[in-house]
Image 1 (cartoon, rainbow, N blue to C red):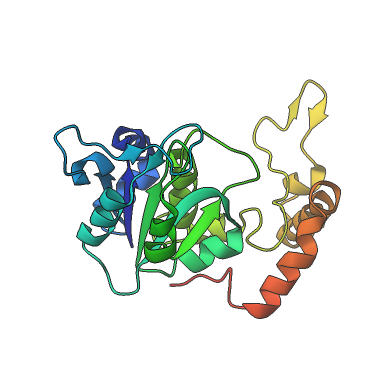
Image 2 (image 1 turned 135 degrees about the horizontal axis):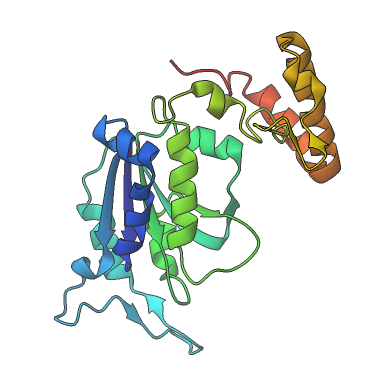
Length: 240
């Protein structure tokens, strides 16, 4: 799968390569990752990529010309999608992430300041996404969240598919509690069932705890996830 990011802060995305999983996936050719400095697509000597908004108001707006030039210059894989990070976009969910993982190329535009020229969104962006109902300084962090979430769904990126298949939200539930050694610490013990060696009972306990935790912490996701599962019954299966 191919990822391309358009940003005025390309150095931020080097932090993704801190992850050994990400580095191994790139080395193995599971993913291709290109970061494109928007300023390289400006035409003036000052590499200007923003300007004041028409109609007045605070801040600056990213100009349409360098944005379009960047999108049209990046080598396109048939079927690619151009995504723009914005608090006005569709909320990113695990089900949507799974769908995006089937797209051969994602070009992610990270905005800044007061946003981008709306004509760019209307003419060159396929979908606008948000990571939540709050505002951050720019689209770089949302873009990194999307890239990390989608990359996990690409076969071979994470060593164990079971790890991906049991992630929170993948089954429509939050993940069950996890424990490791020691078996007891300051009077707090690991549940006996997890130390029993009875895998059937362990699986039953984990399913019950996942349901309990979801009902207690995020009951609203149950109805939506059930509907999504009905629409897409193959989700969660190993694509290999």
